[in-house]
Image (tube, rainbow, N blue to C red):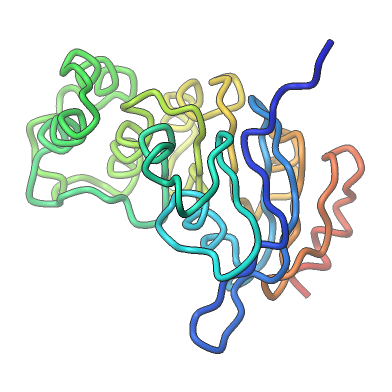
Length: 229
């Protein structure tokens, strides 16, 4: 059986903020339908990696391909096929939950039926007409999950996606953003056991450089722990 095509390919990816190097010479391949988990301390470059893949930041050097398209030149061709969930929920606080999702539905040409389906699935239907600034942090996170998957993306970029979620809420969003969703995923995590359990490939970043990249069954907890020391 032929191997699945690569959904994400990085060759020598480097990204700087002024004189500070955020990512240095990162190289890896993520086959379609698999999950890459990214470990590293704060400031290691995890969020920068997601933002480059989401076409929000331009690489300064190296090759970046997402779904076969080179970034940033072909970013227009893949932007609508990517779902992004970050620490910033990318929601309008003075709009209701339903209004937020309908706004994004119009941008992507998605029917409003999809909005109602997602609100029901994450348990927000009864609060859908309340303004987002009245939501708890967990409710905001659930709504942000809805926004990220609203357009049925091929690739999900998830920055600590279960932050602020209690076990019941985690169970609600898991079918949408978990491994069972069938999508290619890049997930950042500080949880070695949980991160390895849901992924196929692990990347360790420290100071923007690759400490390790390997199939998860080749990565030891000690290697992950060393990133934080």
